[in-house]
Length: 153
Image (cartoon, rainbow, N blue to C red; front, side, top):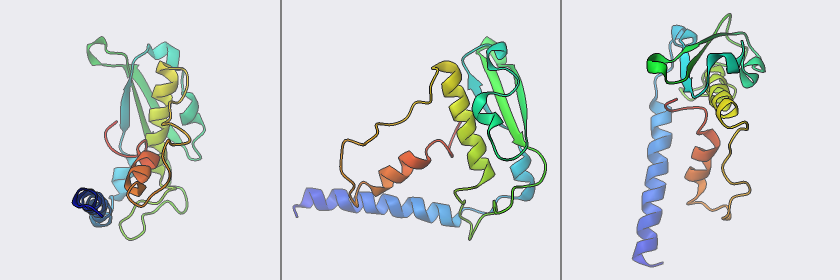
């Protein structure tokens, strides 16, 4: 292997280690943290969204939806929070978020609602990808798979 390829491999593997380490060291969310509002700005009028936009009405647990004009006349602010008890099996395991975490489902539904309202369809990355699956591409594949569930809205 030449030095450039070896250096790139070291950077990718090191980056993946940082991501995994941050996830494992993330403190477990407090019980009250799950009841907080998650909001997103949508570039459309509040009347166009209706009382409960499509991806939010399909969640498997009760949520409260708040729709109001965004500050400065910049579209609509769509906010959601979980009401009632947490769904069974939705707790964290060893500080890691599980794939069936209700907060991740809410964040994904918010992003899909924005995409449906602004574009008319849920935009996805290229499928199938243009490259084959490799060890060095695994961190990017993971990030692409879970990008709609975490991070800034």
